[in-house]
Image 1 (cartoon, rainbow, N blue to C red):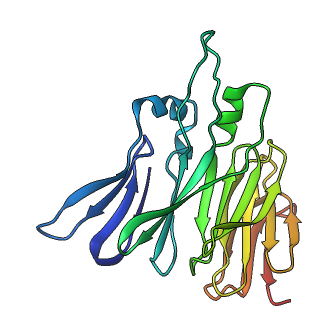
Image 2 (cartoon, rainbow, N blue to C red):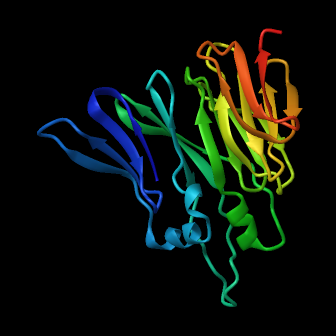
Length: 235
């Protein structure tokens, strides 16, 4: 379940079934509106996934756009009871004023021998939109990180990690630098991605990270020495 507030007391909310709601907390108009529903057949897919993977939600800092994780379809079976169709994790992109969905972005999928496993591991574990709304990023359980340009909705970068390295906590840097970072896997590997220079930076055993408000500094906590390291991004 996720909730994000934006202008004039309005908010977006995803429930435990990944249904998306819009709400309004203004006096005299406390109401909710269903924007994306989860059918009973699709619920079977979510029942196979840990609760934190359902309906992840993020808003751009300028409150113009929202991104929400979802799925592309429903389970279908053949006569023997085997799953016969392919389902992919997707990012639904919404503009907030007026509120409407403008695009559905499917994430690159890795196919396993068992179609059910392929469907489950293509689901999203993290989604994010850059503060200025220029870029969208998502990470799947199979270790795929995909980044799109929000203006033309085209893929900018696909990073294929091992499926043991499920990405989480992906965030873009504030400011104009097209930088994003995330932590992945049980070893807590930290990745910093520079979209302009197509250059990556990696640290081990990182527990947490955060950007300064202007995006010029990055603090990384943990590491092999257990210290907090400050990086100047311009250098």
